[in-house]
Image (cartoon, rainbow over all chains, first blue to last red; front, top):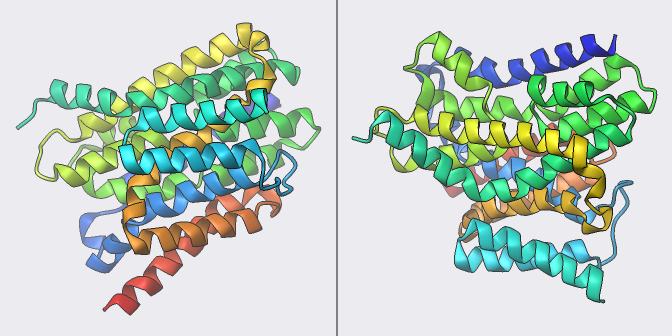
Length: 103
Length: 228
C-alpha cells in the first residue's frame, strides 16, 4: 500500500515536471505572458524563504531575535553586495551558528 | 557556438555552489526517514522516484503520523505543483527538442537547476545546445541528492540536530533571488508572495506553496499594467 503511494506520488511529481514542457508551444505564450513568467523565480522562492525564516517548525512566528532572522539578514546583505552564492550560504549559516552557539 | 559537452559542464559549474546546501539537506532527509521508522530502502526510494526534497519529508511525516496515503500523495502533488510554473518558463527554451528528450529532461527539473539554467538561457538565447545546461545542472543535483540521502540513511544520526541544517534551504533560495533585489517591481512581488506564504502557511495540504506564487504573479500582472 505505502509502496504504491510512493509510485503514485512519483508519477504525480513527474507529471508536474513534464506537462508544461511537453504541452506548451511557443505561439501559446504571448509577450504579456512572457513578461509575467519572468517573475516566476521572484514569486516561488520567497514563498519558501519567508515561512522558512519567519515561522518555526509548528507554524508559529519566531521572535525578532531568532537566529534564523539574523542568518537570513546576513545572507541577504552579503549576497546583495557580493553576488556570490557560496558566500551567501556560508555567511548565512555561520552567522546563524554564531547566534546559536555563542549567545 | 558552445558544444554540448561545454554547455553541460557550465551547467554543472553554475549549480555547484548550491550543492553546499543540497548535500546537508539530503543527509537530513535520509536521517529523518530512518528516525520516523521507515526502512532504508523505502526512504531511499522516495529520493529516486519522487526526487523532490521538501515533499519527501512531508510525505514520510504524514505517513508515519498515520495520515492516509491519499492525503500524503495529495500533499506531495501540491508541494511539487510549483514545477508547473518552472515548466511553463522552460518550455520556450526546450520546445525544439524531440518528445523523448523533453520527457528525459523533465525528470531533472528541480528548484536550483531551474533557477541557474533559466538565468543561463536568458543570457544566451541563441546558443543551440542550451538544454545541455539544464541536463548538467539537473544531473549533478540528482546525483548529490541520491548520494546524500544514502549517507543520511546510514550516518545521519551522527549529525547533531542543533546545527539546524534545514536552514540551508532558505539560504540557497536567498542566494538565487538576491540579484533581483535590484529591481523595485521584483522586490514588491517578492514581498507580496512571501508575506502571502507566511499568512497561508497553515492552510491545508501545504497549499501555500502554490497559492502564494499565484498571488505574486497576479500582483506582477497588475504592476505591469500600471507601468504602461
